[in-house]
Length: 72
Image (tube, rainbow, N blue to C red; front, side, top):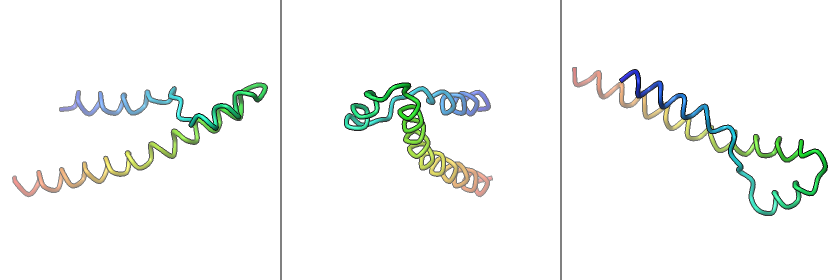
C-alpha cells in the first residue's frame, strides 16, 4: 500500500513539464522574444488546473479513511 501511495505522489510531482496553453495564447506568446512570459503563463495554467484535483483527491482520501475506520 505504501508503494502505491509513493507512486501516486511522484506521478503528481512529475507533471510540471506540460504545455497547457490554448492555441490562441500559444500563437501570441510564441512571437515574444525570450519566452519568459509564455513559461509563466504556462506554469500558472498548470497550477490552476492541478489544485481542484488535489482538493478532490484529499477529500476522497479522508472519506475513504473514515469509512474504512467504521468497518473495523
